[in-house]
Image (cartoon, rainbow, N blue to C red; front, side, top):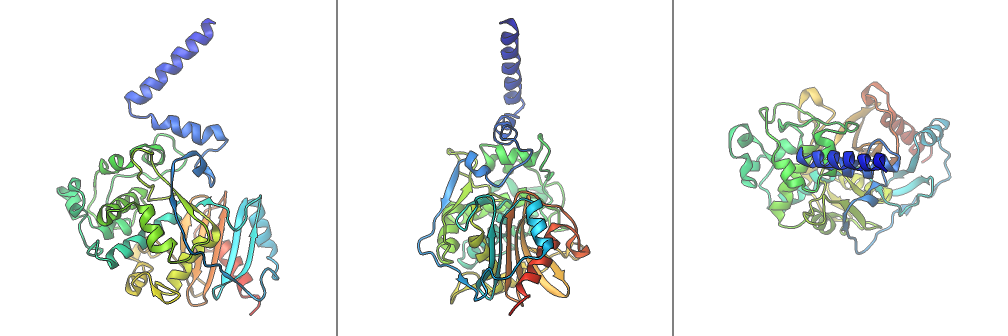
Length: 380
């Protein structure tokens, strides 16, 4: 009994210290990640968080290609999907599904956490807010929306700097470190306060530095500018008019504060995420409706900085055998890959990903680009 008593006392002391040093978010992290057998966020973790629904009203179903699922994957692709625990793999050609395959009980309506794929969607929402006049443009100061950015280097910060990840914010992007701002942002119950307390320590607009904090602050700007929640704005301006087949979920920090994790965590179906590939291939037009200004679409899929020509505004940019490719990328290998000239979209959802430099023809993203393109062009 004495041993149990001392164990309980020690646990109580540890928990008290976590709260005193403002590390109580670790308790949520342990419960959500480690006690579920994981070491980092995973694609079905939305079940352990509060979520807001992204609604759809009139589903538009993708057409099926005349050769739908009649083309076999290459042995490389088969092995890749098996080893990396792929859950969904789709190839769309000329607006028709040519190939789709699901694994481990997933299907065309299954939800899966997109992680940083959401960053590209946030930039799309920025474009819509500019188009509708809520935000003046990429050069509008963030201080117009938050007083915390009126002084010093922060006064130079613009929404364009946030979209291009060049804010100069104090932020250390790590996914496997427990005591870290990235982990804290994932488990905190008050995202707004956390982000507004991050300092701008370098002159904005100088260079690209990947930072989820930038996208979170950008989401907060969009929320404040439009006067509605990010989930509602996404539903009204994209999910519904683009005919999403399924409602999606967006993780929020807490029921009390209801701040969406703008840098990540829209859980949706593979087919519905593919719609953003189609939207950008068609320069912002969706079946005759101009959802995004075509000039904005063209701008965001161009490099912002010469020394990081693989990134535009929220989109990743590559060259595959002389062909332009732009992608939406997320943690653990969530990819929406678009070949604009060839009108090909490849979607992969899953649990694992081997990183590498696409331009050096290495890593899983390159393999999905290469093998997906082979499949798409194996027949007319």
